[in-house]
Amino acid sequence: MTAFTPRPSQSEILAYRGGKMGISAVPGSGKTHTLSALAAEIIARGELGPDQEVLIVTLVNSAVDNFSSRVSGFIQAHGLLPHIGYRVRTLHGLAHDIVREKPALVGLEERFSIIDEREADFIRKEAAQAWLQAHPNFLDDYLDPEMDDSKRDWV
Image (tube, rainbow, N blue to C red; front, side, top):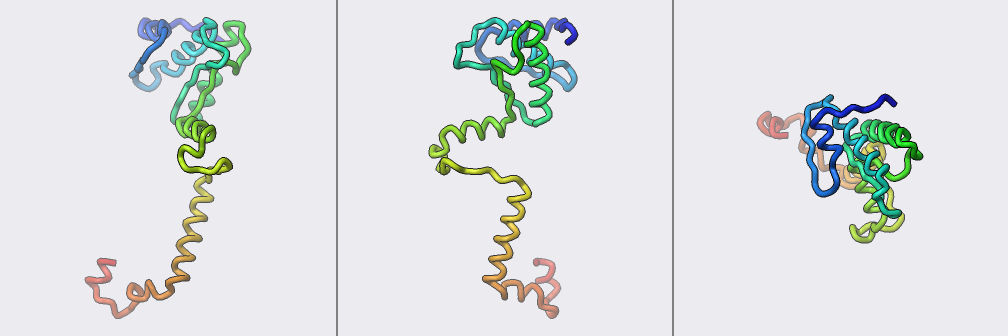
């Protein structure tokens, strides 16, 4: 990995030592690179307890891979083993991890599962078909060829 020479604003971020921090910057300004370097610095300083890790939360899966790769590179540059001392998750992945630990707190069974969009579409279609079969005449008024035009517009 190429040596990272931070700009002054990035150096301020790398000097972080605890508490809240917000970073606002335009796309391409180096946020991911700087935060990856910060995560590696926190790990390299050895200040984390045995039950602690750096948690990086992002919105999209592609950013998870990007952060993981960059943090790993910075950690290796410090002479440490990659993929230890940090976790990168999407917001949804983190929520899943939290719920998976204590599903009863949100009213779920221990062995709950999360379905994908394809499965959700299938369930919706099946539910709609079952309802229409149970109510076969429901749409008759809407299919009436003699329907008044004003009612047809409403439908």
